Image 1 (cartoon, helix red, strand yellow):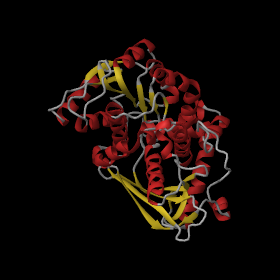
Image 2 (tube, one colour):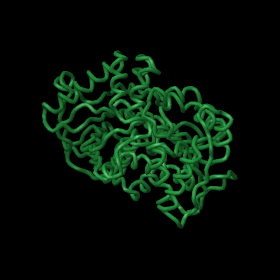
Image 3 (cartoon, one colour):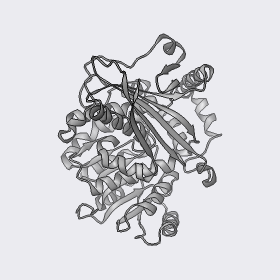
Length: 423
């Protein structure tokens, strides 16, 4: 499929390509994107970038190798020159609350399409508030949180809601997504982001930005809330049909901001109105518990750990001594052992549903979660390059890229299956 005509030097630039996630993203581009892609890897160190280029040549000697672009997050003139050269930019340089604002703003101003893999919901909320109107004027499609946080739950929720609409002829009332299986270790960059987040944002800003529908372009007025029983309120553990025993998810509030923004965007984007989930839509995410004790330990462990990281700075200093440093992560050998599986259900919004039918989704990936992030980023860039998305400019979510994006990530290895089951 032909790329869009854009008149810029590059179709795609991977900024931060020498970092842990950036390198894996460049590798996915080299192995799987069309061989006529005009692209570049960008960062601070020319020698390290040259090593990335050589690795890409080995992975796919039949494709055009990437060019090298030198750019530093502290040099705005370099960043501006970089974003003006490319149609789409992927930035993996984090923590984004420290290094990300300049390139986000410049893309919004210059009409350069933008992708990142942050999980920093308060930072994204701040960027939406400051720069979405600028992106709308320039036509820039800006999609933050396009990695493991929070593309999988967003795409799963979209896929189930579309299934409910077509197979059960109804809007969606309630979506539950679970991390059913997880075998992975966080990289140094992810850990650094978690630690710095508590230093860059007030507790009030974190709480406000992670409320349900906090970044939705329209208010949520139905008052509907996810089902929550007394035992769950006390112990953090619940049981759901087709999903089993569940407990608190570490990524729940972060992913919630993206999915509930998708809800509002689908209502507002003219080309997406038929995909709108429904006025009484609710959403929640959980982690699969082996048993009640396991679920309770996870729930209270997350609560206590978050408290100490947020309010006891010496704990953050101590943790930094024992974790991977930025740019570091698990070995190639260990990457092959990693995997993740999601499951989810979507209940139709029907007054009378005697059969209690619902959509059920299973999605899985075998391999490093950072390879998966690279997959999401690269395939999203390809979708922007090739497809008529009907989005205009603004700050969007992964699900706004639609069915063709879902098909691409499925073909690339993130498998998604949706069917109708009895609730």
